[in-house]
Image (cartoon, rainbow, N blue to C red):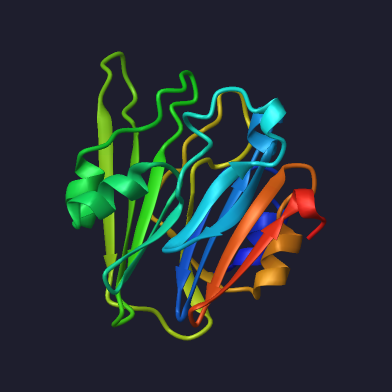
Length: 213
C-alpha cells in the first residue's frame, strides 16, 4: 500500500484524479493550459460542476465544463467528464460507461475515469482509454470492490505523469493510505492544481486555486 500524499508530491501532473475510500471520496482537476486552469468547482443541488473562473477567457468548454459529481438515488457518481450525466441518465454505472469512449483530444486521448460509491460502502471504478494501435478502438476496464478498511482507498488518475503526449494511466487502481482533504490539496503540484472536491462522511469541502485555498 502506498501513501496518497507521497504519490502526489512525487508527480507534477497526474491530471484529473479520483480517490474512493472508507467514508470519503476525492476528485481533483489540474491544468497546463490557460483554458484548463481557468476553472473553479461550485456546488449544485446534487453535486458539483466546473465553471470558468473568468468567463471572458473561456475558449473551448466541451471537455472542461461538466458535472463531475452527482447523486443517483443513494449512490454517488464521480467522473472526470460529462459521462457523469450519461451514467445518471441511464441509472446504470456499467451501461453509462459502455456508452462512452475516451476523450477526442489526440494525441493524448485522455481517458475517461469514473466511479460509483454505494451506500453499503462498496464501489466501482472504471477507465475508458485509447487502445494502442492504428485502429480507433476503446478499451473499457472495470474494477469492483466490496469495500475498504478505514484510512484506506483506491486511486486512479487520467495520466501516469507529465509528458508530450501525456501517457494514460496504466494498471489497476492503486491501493493507498488516505490523507485528509487539506493534506491532499497541499500535496498536489502548486503550479498545476486547479480544484479539489472532498466528501468526508457526506460533508463536502471545495478547494479552488483561484480563490486562494
